[in-house]
Image (cartoon, rainbow, N blue to C red; front, side):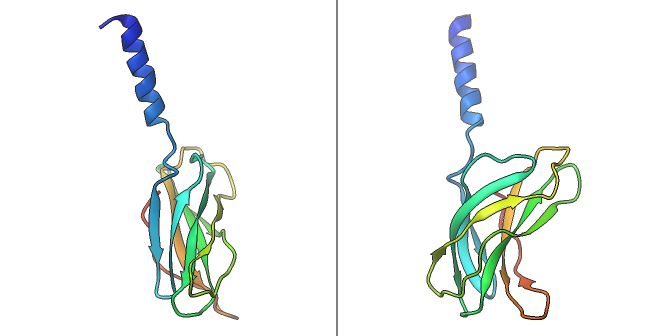
Length: 132
């Protein structure tokens, strides 16, 4: 294989590896809601922008909260990133899962969870989604 051809193959391989996984969607569910989320752009060490759908399975008010998974220390719980919904039909919800500071290492990905609004009490949240 010529050096020029070898270089072309290497550049093509690197460009494919560097593509963001924006099309990769994860399911998110809890006792109070369900939906899907996917990244809309590249992952940075500060987080990611995500979009998808959300519905309340009980008619209670729910929203999305996020987490940045880090290989260099404790994960960063970023809290709420979407607006509320009590719709039992799927509605578009998403936002920015951003940490309060830039991390010293690149994030492995983000996770989402569905939380239920509890008036005058801490909001209850379901388990984290898969990493995306």
